[in-house]
Image (cartoon, rainbow, N blue to C red):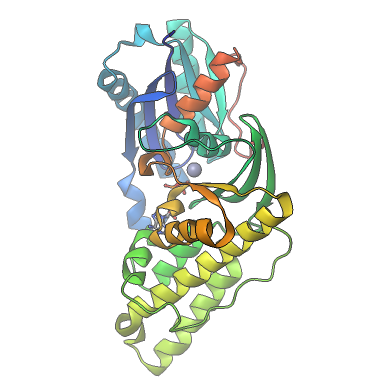
Amino acid sequence: EQKTYILGIESSCDDTSAAVLCNDKVLSNVVASQKIHELYGGVVPELASRAHQQNIVPVVDQAIRQAGITKEDLNAIAFTQGPGLMGSLLVGTSFAKSLSLALDIPLIDVNHMQAHILAHFISEEGFDTPEFPFLAMTISGGHTQIVKVNDYFDMQVIGETIDDAVGEAFDKSAKLFGLPYPGGPLIDKYAKLGNPKAFEFPKPKVGDLNFSFSGLKTSVLYFVQKKVRENPDFVEENLNDICASLQYTIIGILIDKLKKASKQTGIKSIAIGGGVSANSGIRKALKDGEQKFGWKTFVPKFEYTTDNAAMIGIVGYLKYIKQEFTDMSVIAKARAKF
Ligand code: KG4
Ligand code: ZN
């Protein structure tokens, strides 16, 4: 079999990442997470681009070394063109262009959202790949989408958030509970110890397969304000129950829409991706769906669900096979669609 080495580069938000793939197998996947944003309780775009600028060379260098190859072995370079933060995207885009020019190898533009979905096609022991067509739900701090995937590059967004992403609902609520950023994993942790029926949060009324999370955030704010007026220690004393109840509500929202999407399309094959797919509650609810609704579900290896360059590399490989390259006039697109 022919060996194709692809370098993937991801810099759309606050993680600088580089990966090397040999065909559909990951040889290395280096991620430099930017700690700096914790201090600000969220991603600061200006600081993110600076950190990318600082990290990109050492991260790419390390990915190539860890893969046990040299840069001369590379067959192509794939990079995230968008969507994402413009300043962050520019760093990866410019770097990828320059390196492709220097090594005289093809350049491949990758849509970040498609990459989250196609991460399921990375060959990894113990992980199945879904068959077409399937539904993919991408849930993270930046995205909340349900996509009908007909083929590798034939995808249709059939539902998405009209305001906040689901990860923001976790993180912003966590902030109101006095938890550090990003609060999602902490809510997950405390939720395991609490009663999910202790408190009730309203589910948003938004039509079709779309999502809305800004109202939930507001109702959490009012809930906390009201309770703290009655008892200043309310949040500390009830943190587990609050987290469990909020998580229960959010998972309910996600699963309701998946059920609706599955019914509408007749597709029972369901894949998830994005940072929030690490949530233990959503994983369990999805697994339960196999019994309850006859679903077949797919959750990728954790390191391929959060922002990473391996997922950019696999898209690079899939496009390389089709000889789908881009030229040097390519530009980053903050609002890239597919
Ligand atoms: O994919 P990701 O690393 O970056 C993007 O936002 O694109 O996702 C990060 C998001 C954050 O909002 C974080 O709080 C959330 O994923 N997250 C979780 C969990 N782990 C990460 N949310 C709930 N439960 C978790 N276990
Ligand atoms: Zn992402």
